[in-house]
Image (tube, rainbow, N blue to C red):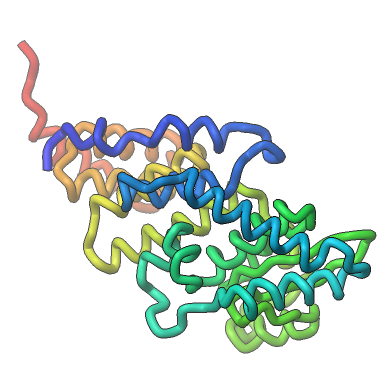
Length: 283
């Protein structure tokens, strides 16, 4: 792979424009479909936005006249996870297709983050205030209205979860290492939702040794989180593995400037010295 990678892997201008809008104007579904376009260059984004619109319209006919937060959540849950058949993909959980919005809409199967994103976006189209909940180890959503919140688990067929059940789940997963606190149920920002989705994809591609796609996901993560020194360093490592020498050096230098006391400073400086030997001198 050569230095042409930097232009080929540039963050799509449209994605950059969307994520730098104010929170209330970020189109979560469009941003997620732009991520999917990295895998599917010919993806018809308007087609899938229209699918979401149709699902939102049908959801409105099911719950538009329902009164009461829990009753509204139960109505939407029944529509999405029983009538439409959305479900958690337990058979092939780590397939990247579970993280691409178009695939989840086509096959009705996904992982917690994408099923939550679909719930949020269909709810939004039906005028229902659903928010992402970045619960440790398992993304969920909550419906919030009139100072009442109802937590929904899209991966488990839209199961309604109480705070006590959330605490029990946390204890089973983390033991005493991570005590439950209500702040763990706060609403995630749209950038946080996209970052979590992209991080899942990055880790999947790394496990499959697909550094090129892992780099594409990392570029998006850095665009969302430009002050994340860890992501900048990890991007430098990916550039290094893909023989993009100049980009790797730039990221490593940025990392050291922003983290002058980094515990791995010596190793990163050694990377820079070795990589610099591969850059021809200009005369």
